[in-house]
Each structure stands twice: as structure tokens, then as C-alpha cells.
Image 1: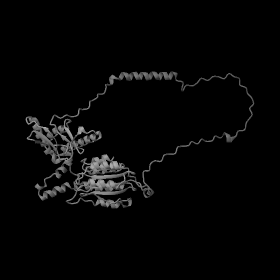
Image 2 (image 1 turned 120 degrees about the horizontal axis):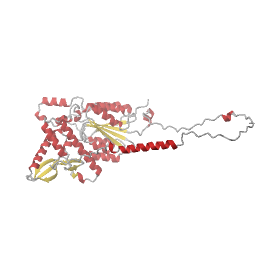
Image 3 (image 1 turned 90 degrees about the horizontal axis):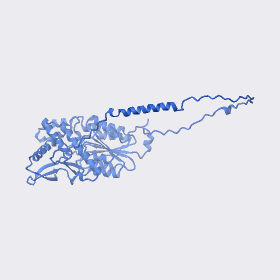
Length: 455
């Protein structure tokens, strides 16, 4: 744990001391229910130096920088967006956790202080941390309400316009020459009748030749299917790598709330009997769980990917590195599906080497001369290394600009959003069986590689 900053503490200011105690109570109340990443936006306050200062600490590692001192506006906007995500996660969790009405009111009052514009926001490795000022909350001013003008203030303009249109119509009717019959003027010249020599008609000359208009050639519509000849002959089609999280957390059920799952992850199993532990684990891993549903949807998604796209699999099962497979051609996709179907988390040494998985997947693809794709199916972040996965994504975006990474986030923790954002991909949040089906379909559709074989 490192110190971010320290501020002078007036021990005679009873209100500030009371707020400090309340803040520490708030952290103790929230910590069991929040993820480490979400909890990290709340700096930890301690009295130091004979209680003369309040020291603000964090578990994050890196050099703290004030958000207002960041000159890169795009980076600053991204961090502000991350901060809002974390605050939204706290607000959502508070609505779900089992607390009393008094505790709910206490947390709600502190949420206003957490969102206060008067707080100091520090940034450590692109992660925001709030240092509370313990001042009255300063919230954004509400947008001004612009009332619509009364109809009776402009009705006379409408009436004047109608009168003007009526006058123009009358003038047009009186003076416009179009559509009126012209008067017939009798011919006063005498008619002289002379014999006319009868001429023989030439039927070939009289017959008018039809005029043939040349029509522009229609532009062929893009084909909505792939022929078998194209599959056999085209060697420059996109490729895809599916990164599949096979860690123990993927065994968690989809039938519990996130707050209940957080409570399970932080449970004190040492105070339980073995029977209680077994029953608790059975309830929290019952079907449908994250892994069973993700496997089922992944298998159906593979059938929707067009036949000329070769697919490889990268599995995240244990540290230090992810496991890879060769690319599977269309006729061998059954082997790929069998491999996914057999995935089960390893006992005792399960982990999520996500950094390794993305790095290896990117090396398997071109992403420069053709469009290539990575689909990540995971419920968390890397717990095998402290290497910066956002920096890795930035490097991939620079060196392989046509490599897009989409993420299906099973837990909705927003922990690896930067990987998709930096590579032009998207993040799809899925926390129920129905959401996983819908979001996986969207993730595949956005890759433009789902044309069927032409029959």
C-alpha cells in the first residue's frame, strides 16, 4: 500500500473528525460487496504524524498524478468515464446488498460526497482514485430548463402568413397564362383550290423505327453468401481467434446477484463446517453457470461464422501462459467444438492468464494486410501478471491496425474495456443466460464474418 498524499488535520474541528470516522465506516461496510477494482477508487484515510495529518493511501501501484494536471484531453476523458463506471457499479451494488434502511440512508448520503466535484481525483496507471475533502458536496449544476413560448405570442405571425399566401394565390389565378385556352382567330385569306398530284406512299418510309433507349447496367448487389469455390480459392480471408476463460470463477452460477457473488468470494470459510462449505459452494456453482452457458453459446456462434474463416482457440486455465490450438478449417470445426465442450477449470491451480492469451492470439493473426478478429469470453482480469494489459492493447492497435478485439464480459466488471476500446472493438456485457446469447450474437455480427454457404 502506498501513500497518495497527506493533508493537514485540525483535531479541534469535530465535524471533520466525525466525517473521517464515518468515511472509514463506509469503507468497512462496502468492501465485502465491491470488486477490488471498483473499491480502488476510494482512497483509504488514516491519521498519521501524531494525528496532525490525514494520510490517503491506495493498493494501486504507480506514480499518483492529479487528474486536472493531465494535458492529454482524450486520456483525461477516458479516465473520467472510468470513474463514472466505478461510481455506477457502487450505486448498483448498494441497491442489491442486504443492509438496513438506516445503512441505506447512510450510504446514500455518502454517495453524494463521493460524486462531489470538490474532491481531489488522482490517477495511478490510468486508474482514478478519489481523495475526499470532507467538504459539503459540490454537484453539477442542473441543465437550465427552456420553457416553450406560448402559442398566443406568435399566432398573429401565423395569421399574417396565411393572409399573404391567400393574396399570392389570387394574383397567380388572375395573371398566370398557363392552363388558359387561347382565342381562335379566323383566317381571312381566300382559299384557292388547285389539283394536287397524287403521290404514291412508301410504306417503308412511313413506318417509324422504334427508338431503343440504352439502360444503365445495374450495379450488382453484394453477395450475401459464400460459394464453395470461393472457400477453396480465396487464401486472404479474415481469421479469428476465440479466447475462452476457463478459470474457476467461470463456475459461478448465473442465478445469483453480483452482490451475492461478491459476498461468496469474500466469505470466511474458516468459520464454517465442511458441510456448510459444501452446501454453500454447491448453491453458488449450480447450473446454469457462467461456463456452461458460455460454452453452449460459443458452440452455436461457431456455426454462424462463414465457412472460409479459419478459427483457433486460446484457453485461459492456469498461470503463467495461455494454451493455444492450431487454426481449424471449416471441415474440422467439429474438433474445435469438442475442445470447447470439454473445458473444465483446473482444481487448485486455476487462474486467468489474460495478458498472455491476448498477446499470443495477436501473434497468430495478421491484422495489417487483412481484417482479423479476436473474441474474448471472460468474467475478469488477469491474475497471473502485473503487466499492463492496456499498454499491450495500445501496441497491438499500432502494429496491427486491422485487428479488432471484441469482449463478451460475463461479470460486467469493465476490467478490460481498454483492450476493446484501443483496438476498435466493443464490449458486450452479459450477466444472464439470455444476455449471453444476445450479446454473443452481437459480438459475432459486428465482425462481418457470418455469411452462409451459397446453396
